Length: 433
Image (spheres, rainbow, N blue to C red):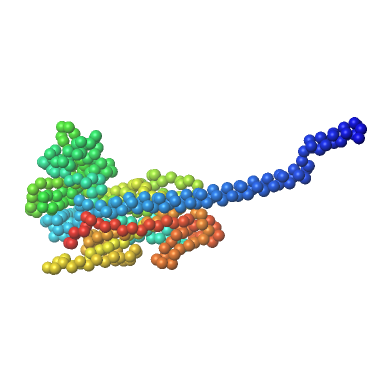
């Protein structure tokens, strides 16, 4: 082979090595890469969707458990430093000169004072979606009364005239309870928060003597309690009713005072029929299901007229159900040999209302020994295409977000997480009246 031939062969091999992909090879590579990219995107989309699904469920689970802990704490305090039923309490004659114990013009909040005041289906009117279509929820509400702001009783040293023209009770500076208040950073603010948790509102004050006899009066709405260096620590009362009547023999020994509040637990929407509550209502973020479809578990104080002081505190978002049931001692303690008789009622039965829907004739909320609670919250976004429920007790794990009913195959159901618990009432364990 001569030199020219070798040169031609070598040049041809070099050209082949330097040549790029053909058009067919390039198209095949691009299509293959596109298919791989599409598979990665699809997998990523499903993984992201599943991740957010589980995050929503975890959030609902955490929300319901945290809220239930708060609710259990309040239920356990029912009747604490207060009364199980002010109209039946033998130690608390509201008006000793009145045959029915009710002083003329007494506020509704005082006459309804009880450790537990149950309102069956009390949240249903504000949560229409919970009972619409396939949803079978009829949430209750409940009022709990007791001392929710402190654990102290304050000894009274002397009387004066308060800011509402009623009695001013000066707190003894020798009392350990008062000393602990004065040792705080701001004693005046501490007393205000204890006796008046909502500014400008009048809350109940319990006055008791050493024999356990007690009266309940409203504090001064302007400022119920306070402290100053020149005046000392004090509690001001309204001058509305003749509670401290000498004909009753009040008092024996020392006088002590402590705050009493009524707390309401209920479910409400962001947009409510109550105009005061609407002051804080805002449109939810996209995906919440609409303003009218998002309900919150609310904890609020109750005023002297028995109305909730809204907006209250949002304890849990996306709440859908709240139910109560009671274990009650219906035994007869009037004879020589007391006989206990405990009855436990199921959720939704009429006996719960017979016992604790109010505290008047025929009602015995003071005999409640334990409260069972069922609380349910849902996911923020509907992510299920079919309804699903367990047969027993119609236990629901899906929540339809359409008032006219949901269509199978469409993402219109949200997942529901439900927790049930039971709380004993130690403050009512020995109330047999």
